[in-house]
Amino acid sequence: MSAVQSWDPANYARHARFVSDLGSPVVELLAPQPAERILDLGCGDGALTKKLVDLGCEVVAVDSSAPQIEAARKLGLDARVMSAEALPFREEFDAVFSNAVLHWITRADPMIAAVYRSLKPGGRFVAECGGYGCVHKIRMALVQALDRRGMDGEARVPWYFPTPGDYATRLERVGFRVDSIALIPRLTPLPGDIIGWLETFAQNFLDGLHGLARQEYLEEVRAALEPQLRESTGTWVADYVRLRFAATKAPPLA
Ligand code: BEZ
Image (cartoon, rainbow, N blue to C red; front, side, top):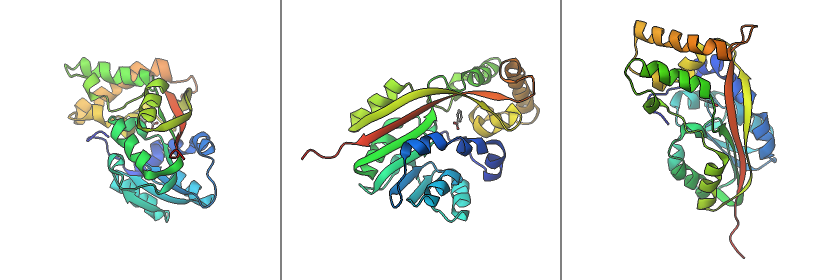
């Protein structure tokens, strides 16, 4: 996770509620059963965690953001501040679930190993995150506008958007069986202006830009994206691509 990126629950609710609202397909893939013990990895403000609890699951929710965990606790959830790479659990969970978080974890292997350790034999790792090509147009506009300022835009990219082959290899290397994995292009209407999205999800690019310089940068990125991502109705539509997968921790050989 980028050191610059931070999450404010109120801002998240305003500009990013669609992230949990669009989480139904990965919840369906998880197929949670009542009384199952589930780890929600990167729970954010707990909106999807609450759905799992309401289905009768026993859920531990973790996130690296203290403000988001505070918001999740207000929903009555068992929510804990924790790094995904340093999960302390050993064979405790029937499933590890994650929505819209794994692309922030650029060192994926230690996280995948920690998930593997956390699962009971036969447990499932079911997740959705940004996949290869996700927000390509937004990324290019952000990078190029920094390059024009003599900064290394590409070095600021905080996301890891893997191909299915790349992620499947990482999962199999630690012992998972990959049951399904796919890239799903998903044009995503935004609840407001693209600048709200940039200020919520692209803080790494804004680091060190203050006042007028920041405003001019954001306006330049917006102007580059408007012909590509703004519909005639005025709605902004982000060029999301999802990576969705289900994997199983192989039970020990008899
Ligand atoms: C997401 O939350 O899915 C996301 C965040 C940043 C860039 C792309 C996708």
